[in-house]
Image (cartoon, rainbow, N blue to C red; front, side):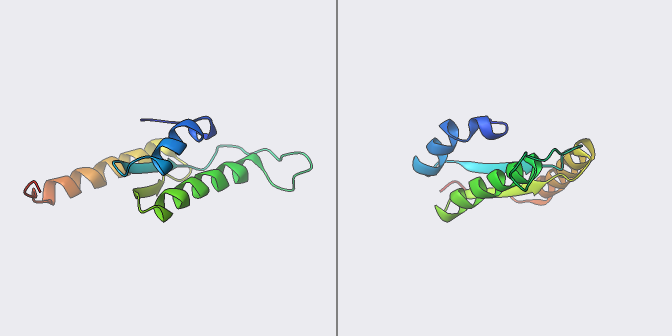
Length: 100
């Protein structure tokens, strides 16, 4: 499954956290270009979004799910390019494992 932002948390989040341990998860986060305060809350929408992402990561991790969190920083395009190069290098130098 592929989900973006808080809208996916309930449906796919429940499936992955409560369902069978069959997934490998990659969580991508980035800094927003701008942030807005939540009136009366004492924190911003960016802080809320980050807390949701961290909470989802921790929920999967605590259930023993295989998850990696990658923070792309302020420049998503540059962060994705770095991630792509890193994965390509890792795959080029890895040795295939026999099927179990």
